[in-house]
Length: 203
Length: 69
Image (cartoon, rainbow over all chains, first blue to last red; front, side, top):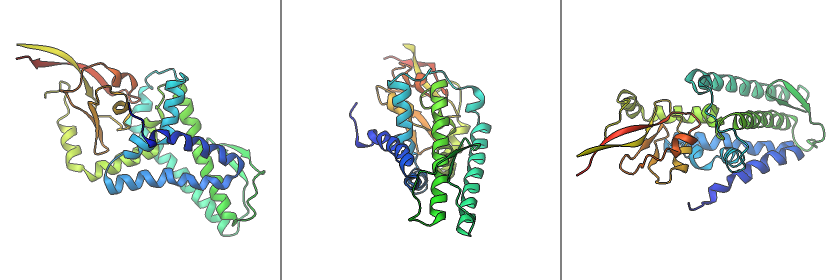
């Protein structure tokens, strides 16, 4: 199959995670992964980001598929359920808003907390980065955002190993959000599809 | 005359991730407006590759009656 430029976006995802280790301020670049899928779904009504441009998905496919690091088992039912998908989205967004609130507190005068929080629980000290040349809130947002990106990558890697390479896509909050936006934009068609869904396809 | 062939059937819990579209050797699958995957039944040869790679486990291979003239 012919390769396109966007088939190599996994390189950028890998570089992004590595750059964050050297200077946390690179975490700001991760906003691309938040804003672009939302923009595409709102403007074009498609999940082109997930389908073509998601570097993280490509990375999981490469590690789990080509390098064989995945067990290639179907994820358990609970992980694939709507409850889990929307529950995880709600939890993820709550933690994201909390991170924004912490950034606001630093903006308002609270002291900068130089730590990356992994899996919302484990605080990893991250004092080697020079953030003196930016406002403390800019650095605080970077710490918070890198925590979000690192946590989701770790979760994605764990489910990649345990189940199929792109199991993360099943409960990825961005994927859930963009699919929701697309469904809202094409309400009638979505309803017709769900109604007409039957076990034996006729064509 | 009629016979049956296997074709891919997309369950209603499809997450529209697009993994199946990348792996289909016949390009028989597409993502419909970011909502779900659809199968072109004329193109699908029922190889089952999509079912194997689908992370959401929503693709089944089912028998379909086809008319052979």
